[in-house]
Image (tube, rainbow, N blue to C red; front, side, top):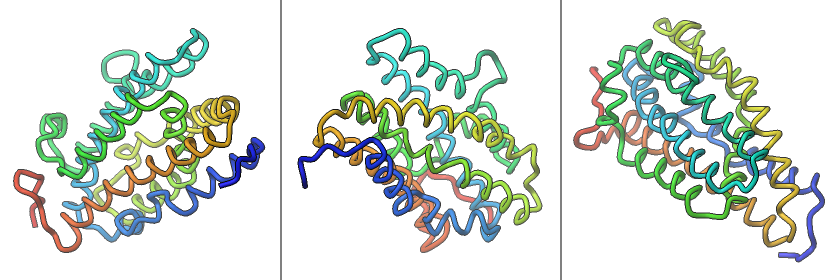
Length: 244
């Protein structure tokens, strides 16, 4: 590895290249999901397991918030928590995901209990929370940059799922609409932050590694779903078992 400090646009190009190679839209499970090729039980398994990730995002963000040194930075990051937790009952991204889960036929209380999620989901999500909790704040913020790749993928997902599943409606997928504007705003802050605060080549490499780690977190969640619900359908004891 060269010690040469990357220019800001070079660093951004390397970050985007990681997404082009490793973002989870390339995973076989997501390709099946977006193409309308899963059955209802498999879509339910995805919604159920993804809920745990959604529910833990504001906890992850609270760890990051506590480590930001200025009011200005904390105000900016606090918006992410409000986006997910809402600013009152019945609002926010977690509530919209619960409505998505109900829309595909799951019981809200069962989803919130997380009793049926896969061990692989739990381990991956908690690894991400622990990463942000314990690693330097530069790496924690860099790990959020998977949102650079999400808006186009969200549009494809909504379009594909509405076309492919008769039991899914636009109302079911309402979670995704605010993310089309929230994610770019989040990216603008995080990308600016890492460009300004990664002041050595070693720190820039840590930023790149943090994004690779986050891509691995998302990919491993889909590995668990694929193995349990697509092939070879090895559902772990206690995990959600769809009706055939």
